[in-house]
Each structure stands twice: as C-alpha cells, then as structure tokens.
Image 1 (cartoon, one colour):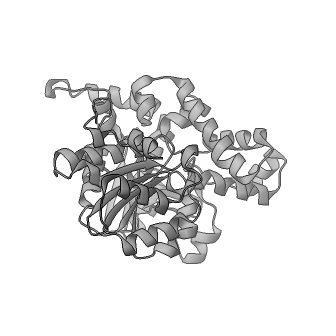
Image 2: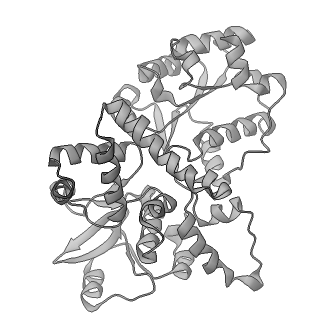
Length: 392
C-alpha cells in the first residue's frame, strides 16, 4: 500500500506540479476559510465539475502559502480498486506510520470520492473525535450524504460545487476584455450560453467529452448502483427532462409519454437529482404546497442541456443560468392564477427573468403584489451584471 500512497502524494518527495490545474479563486477562498473550523468539509457536485482540482489547489495553498509540512498532508481517491479492501482508518494508520506521525500531530486529510467507502460516516466520526485532523472530502452522490448525515450532525459543512459562471468561463478561456471593447461581453456571453461551464469541456470543446460524462453518470452512478436494466428508458427520460428544463414538471404526463408507471418515473427522477444531473425547484408556499406541488426542472449545466436540445431558446437558457446563480439562496417559483414568477429566494428576493422582453400586464400585477425584501426584473446580460444578488 505504501507505494500507492506515494503515487497519490507526490509532494512527499518534493514533486507537486500545479501548472496543468486551473484555479477557481473564489472556490479556493471558500475552502481556505474552512481551515480554521473543526468541521469535516464535504465538497459535492456533478462528476468532473472540478472537485479534485479544488482539493489539490487547497493542498498547494497549504504547502506554499501556509508552510505546512508536506508529510502532514494526505490525499487519496477512495474509488481506487487497489484500496477497496481497506478501511479509511487502516489507510490513515499506514500513512501515519510512513511518516512517523503521532496522534498529537495535526494532519490534513483529503479524501476524494468518500462515498465509495462502506460506513464512511462512522469512520469519519472516529477520525474527527479521536485524531488531531482537518478533513476535506468529496462526492458526486448527494443521496449518500442525506442518508448518512445524522451520523456526523454538528461535525460537517457541505459545499456544493457548480459549473463555471460567466466570469470564470472568461478566465478559463483566458479572455480579457478592455474597457473600450465592453460591447464584446454580450457576444462572449452568448457563446457561454452555448458552451456551459464544465471545466474540461470549456477548455477542450470536445462534444464527445460531454456525451461520455452523461453516459458515465447514467450507466455507472444510476443504472449499476440501482440495478436498472432498461437503459434506453433512462436515456429517453433524461432527454425529456432536458427538453422541459425551466418548466413545471408533471410526473404523470411523462409516465404516459414513456409508457411507464408514475412510481418508476418518480424513482428515476430522484436518481437524476441525487447525481446532480438535474435540479428540482419547489413551488413557493406553505410546507404542504412545497411538498405536493410539481417541481420545476433545471439543467445542471447549459452545455449538457444544449447537448440534448440543441442551442435554441436563449431565454430559457438564460433563466437556467440565473437559477444556477441563485441556487445557494434556495429559490422557489411562484404560481398563482396561471401566472408564474420565476424565483423568490429564501431571503425574500423576488426575481423575474424576461430575456429581451417585458412583463405583460398580469405578470406585472402579480410581481408588484408580492411582498419581498428586494425585487429585480432581469431582461438580459446588462441586468445580470447590475443585479448584486446574482454576483455573490
């Protein structure tokens, strides 16, 4: 095992290169702020969204900015078959023995793909309670965290990693726009609406990469894990979800279209949600309304949506992007007498998205009647940059 651990931790031998990694400074700063807290940090999100890169950029910060001894920093990917027969505790014990580290010496653990380990939550609790340790972990499975969260209640912090936003997209593409060329922003933003924010796809532009990403999640994280044999049905269902992105979703209608049962569709919908292939947004209202009313569907990334639907309906893509910018504020949609307002956040910020158009009379009446801390009508790129809540 020692040889495997050295392969994962090249900094132990002074060979740690980050030239091929592109930093997301805002994300790295969030992770840095968690260093002083005892909490176990769970970094979650879609496959290949950059979780491993984020962990390694933090490792780089610890070594080069905080001057932490490299042997006190340990990274491992727990989906490695060669480690599958060993518990996290056993692996960490081997690591401590390699560097002769006592339990009193603080170590930094970076445990990638944590949910591949059986009983990971109990092992993390043991490490948290008995070791002098700061733990960062990652997973692409939100369901496992929801189920196991009780074991580490009060000991954890969950950070969800989203695709690149427009500013990060420009940084990844190394696009710098001078003030005299500010008119170019809208052109680049339209390109962003087509490309989306999956980091590797932004850099490579290979559509096969996106196809492989979605197929991997459907086949490995959903079908294999849940023993689903009807792969064509799963893929047809996901296509329908992408076509309905930004719309209120009816389980019964989709069940009729696919000639399947509502229970099966409901179960599959949860699988897609648990693996971050879709996002579900509830209706605003009392608890029973939020639970019983149909959800709105949003794509996890604009590029993935365009893969299935083609690049069309810029207004809907724009709304999807606004949702991603608001997701951390736990938005809901408002629906009354056949009129819909796109978003009201948990902290009572009301937003209506009208791409290159204006509210009609009934929409304006409903918009004006709703009590909110702040109200914004977002009609295009300029409004997007001026609306503070969408730039936080």
